[in-house]
Length: 302
Image: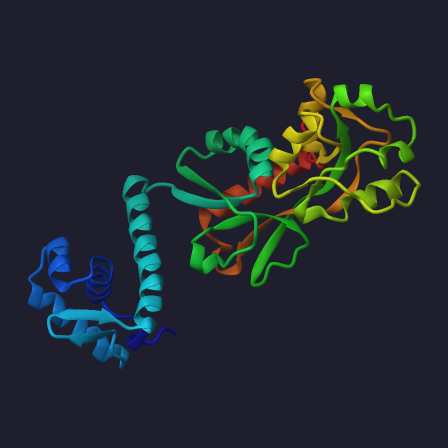
């Protein structure tokens, strides 16, 4: 049950946020099409409701306290979320909007090519995508769900398993011609490209080839896209998920080395906050995604 004291009227919050953003009650009044005295009264009422001062009064100036600045950031996000939801409802009252956080490579190379099928089957649903490399607070960010790599351990969230990551060592034809590989030990002498979130991947790959690696050296990347381009340029060998490796191998830009497609370091999941579990666009997307994964359990379309 929500406490009314901590749910101020939106007019009070709008006045506070406008003063904080514009730096004066006069500028806020012009923006909100109110009188300056009305804005001041709204601010005073909000302070009384919260039981704390939001501004220090210096003659004709209002100076926000540090606590008010932090509070204002939360209010700005909340007002933005309300505005976005209202705009989306007005534009698409019969459907809904799914706001999804995606991993860059997964979103562009795996999800995006398949997403047309979902939109065709659900023409009333709009899908918004934004990339996130790390976990975040669902409530603060406003996402309905996220593509997550690792284990099913996102707090206060439910998970749908998509598929286990499988990795293939890929090398450019030019580098392979210069540095031929006939056995796993030969790979140890090549520069090995690494991803920040998969630092144990090469040890797992070498173990699958039957040897124990020495220290791995090579360039470090934060995204698969840049690591893939570095491998294509001949800067080293990259361990790529099969859904990325397949296209590069078919195009002849990269070649697989030795035993391909070994089990990787984690799993891809769809994660969503428990509070959004029954949101209709998410329910539709979840059902569609489960069907797609069932048809290609390793994440690779035939």
